[in-house]
Length: 483
Image 1 (tube, rainbow, N blue to C red):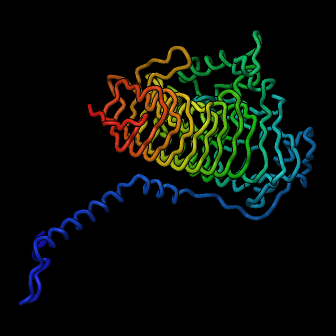
Image 2 (image 1 turned 60 degrees about the horizontal axis):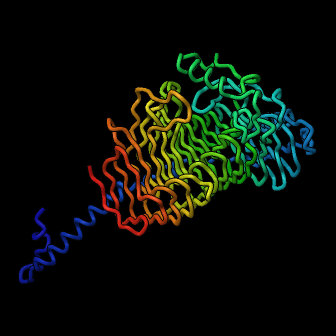
Image 3 (image 1 turned 90 degrees about the vertical axis):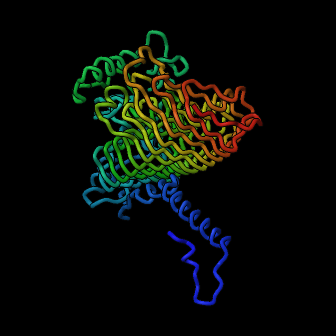
C-alpha cells in the first residue's frame, strides 16, 4: 500500500511530512499487531469457553424430603426417601429436592435430569457406613473403569443436574471406615487387615491390560476399592455450588466424561488418603471457581485415564478453568496427572491463593512412559503463593508410586506459562522439571514472576526453551535458556 498517496490533499495544500507519514504507518502497524495479539490472546479464548458453558436452571417447584418420610435424626436410613423425592421431581419435569435443617442418614443418592439437590443452611447429609447400602454401578477407580460401589452422589447420562446450598455433605470416612483400605497405618490400617493392593492389581494388570470388558470388571464387597464422593458420569450441564464437603472416602468431586461443569463456592475439608478435591477426567468445559481446597492429596487434579484404559477411551480433558480459588493443604495446588494417558489441553488458572506448610507444589504435571499422554497449553496468571514445600512448578515425567511404571508411551509436555506469580517461600526449587532425552519438555515461560526463599533456583533435565521475562528467583534476574 502507498501510504504517501493517502495523505495527498487538494491542489495548493501542503503534503504531510514524511515523519507524520511514518508515525501513522507505525500506529497502523501496531494496531494491526494488537488486533492479532487480541485474536490470539489465550485469556480471551478462556472467556469464550466460559461464555459457552451452560449453567443449569430449574423449575421453582420444591420437593422436601421430609414430606417423603425422611427423618433428620442421624440414624434413620433415608435412602428411599431421597429416591422418592427425586422421582417425583423428575415426574414433575424437574425442580428442587430440598434437604431442610437437620442430619439425614442415607445410602448413595442418584440424581436425575433437571433435579437440583438443595441443602438448606443447617442441613447435613450423612452417608452410610454399611457396605450393603452401596449398589454396584459403572464407575472408575484411579483412571480405570469398573463396576464398583456407587459414588455417594452419582448421576449417569443425565442433563441439567445440580447440588447447591449451604449444607454439609459428610462422607463419614475415617480411620475406622473406608480409609484403612488404602493400606497405610496413618489411616487406620493394621497388620493382617484387608487392603486395596490385590484388588488394584486385579483391576489394572489383570483386567485393564488384558482388555476385559468393563461390565465384567465386577468389584464391591470383598475387594476394598473405595468409592468417589460426587461423580457426574457422562453428564451435561452440571452445577455444584455452595456446599461444604467433609470426610470423603476417595476422590471428592469427579466429573467423568462430562461437559459443561460448574463448581462454584464449594468448601472441601477432607484429609484422607487419595482425597483429591476435584478431578475432572475425560471432561470438557469445566469451571472451578471461588472454592476452598484443604485436602489430603492434590487440591485439583486434572485426569484423562490410566494406561490402557485411558488410551481405550481416548478422550482428552480440555478447557479446564480454575479461578479465584484458595488452596491450603495438599500435594499440589493445580495438578495435571498422573492418570493422563488420553492427554490434557487448554488449562487456565488465574487469581488463586496457595499457602500452607503442608502444600507441596503450586503447579504440578506428572506422568511416565507407561501412562504417556500429551499435556499442552497450560496458562497460569495472578497467583499469590505464601508457602510451598517442594517447588512452584514441578514437571515430572518419571512419576511412579507403584512398581513397573515404565513403558513405550513417551509423554509430551509443551507450552506452559506462568505470569504475575508472587511467591514468598518457594521451598526447594523455583522450577523442578525432568523430561526425557527423546522428547524433552519444551516451551516454558515465566513472565513477571518473583520467587523468594528457595534452596535452589531450579533443577532441569531434558528441558528446552525456557523463556524468563522480568523474572526473579532469590533476587536474581533470570536469563532465558534456549536449546
